[in-house]
Length: 162
Image 1 (tube, rainbow, N blue to C red):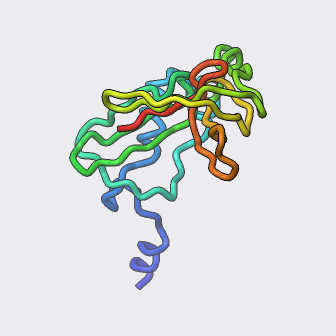
Image 2 (image 1 turned 180 degrees about the vertical axis):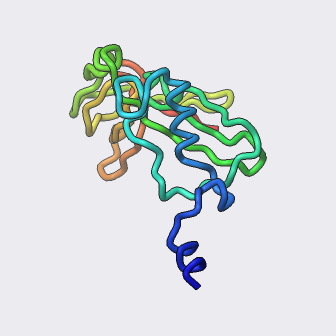
């Protein structure tokens, strides 16, 4: 009886329960980014231990996400696999990029890129941000509607359609 009570009280490792081990994901991100979690250039925080990601039967695929290289995309590259976005702690180079490229109230050019076409129009930035940031913009002539777009360069925002 005591043995079964003790077994119930101990936590099973995530990998034993058929889930990906968050500590393994943290190690992979640290190796990819070249810095440990919580330090400059490393993941801001450890992967949330409450996540129940299916165990990946292939090596994890890691790549930089976004132009600012401030997020690592971690993927389980199998059919039906998962993906996870891990924010990176900004270093001096990232701080330099963080200069505001668009200010609230500024008139910006909105470009929507799709397969074989580009739509563009003017709009008003409802938030300030640096290149790579996502902000809300109100297209010209729209009183209520807003869109979320990424800042591409000073005065130009947009998004890619699949």
